[in-house]
Image 1 (tube, protein in one colour):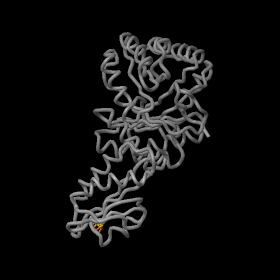
Image 2 (cartoon, rainbow, N blue to C red; image 1 turned 60 degrees about the vertical axis):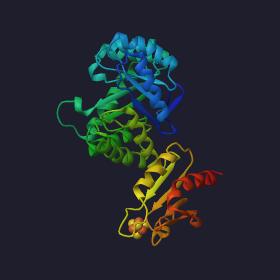
Image 3 (cartoon, helix red, strand yellow; image 1 turned 90 degrees about the vertical axis):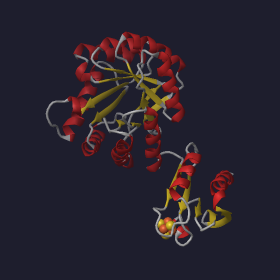
Length: 338
Ligand code: SF4
């Protein structure tokens, strides 16, 4: 098991549940916009929010944000270690740095202050910022070397990351890092891409790691609105059985299909988006194969020409007009929840 660090009231590693984090894309110096986006991310399910701190104005904003945010705030610093020191002073719950661009003296000072204040630091190795090709093992060792610099300066509250934009390399590097380190790991694919493609690439990389028990906090990086990242992260964690929630399965449709499967499945997904209990709902296009093919579902619908069969726990529950399926399914979810 990995060590555990506390970021505000959120534990990372040491058996804590894998936390979801995201990052604002507003100007951090614009306090109002950044607080609004932080609240939107938290409402979507982010448990930690990271903000860039590229200048002194952002530090001022950060100071207000940590007091008013519903979730702990991580300050992301590049190049200027004084901004990392100022962010710790301003109350950041965690700092993220790339030691390669802080300078030796900067690393020492940041580590010393973070250790004094018990503020964890995420040490990130980003393969894209390194020169030359490196093996997965070499990337993992670089991350550990970076951690040692902080350890030598007295800080052991560390979270490690070794991010690449390539799925296979990311998985291999984290596997290597998991073998040689017991620090908690921040996982994710960097620069994953646009919403649809990036979600798939992130799910493959994070899914492979999480199924092996690797990863303590997850960020899905997508171009665009970060709220979408949180939804994808939640779905990844649900898919690998690490979060309670709804699974909506739908048949692929064929010549036997009697109801608008895709539309209905989307309606059911939106009804179930925020449930905090496990439930599997099937939307099947016909009664011929529907019940058999969706045997594992808790409840669902098998479409008929004018009327459809609703079932619960594998048994017929009710037959309803097709125009009433969505409403009846919503009622069944309430009955199922009990
Ligand atoms: S459940 Fe029925 S409609 Fe859906 S793919 Fe199977 S046979 Fe076709």
